[in-house]
Image (cartoon, helix red, strand yellow):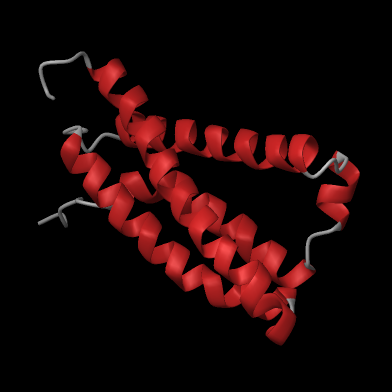
Length: 139
């Protein structure tokens, strides 16, 4: 992989990072919504899913950084993460608008204040995780 230009590796890494985490979210959501939400409520169900998503994000970022041999520079690592974040937001808004027929106002208003805040924090973790994985401590 390292024979490709860095920009191409960053772009491919960002797309694959998004795809891995989004796919896991779809799988978890397909369990959470019909099975966990009716029993525990939206907030608890979403909060229970967050540690699982954190593990997916961590493992996916570690794998992507290694697979595409991304250098440990902020530009390369954050480039991957920010591209993945942009794709994630586009996918989530696109699904909410297109499939669910909700407006942007309904999307924002429909978020639980607690689990929604944790979700926003997880988006920051998602975007920045490629920067943090595989970094060597300074001597």
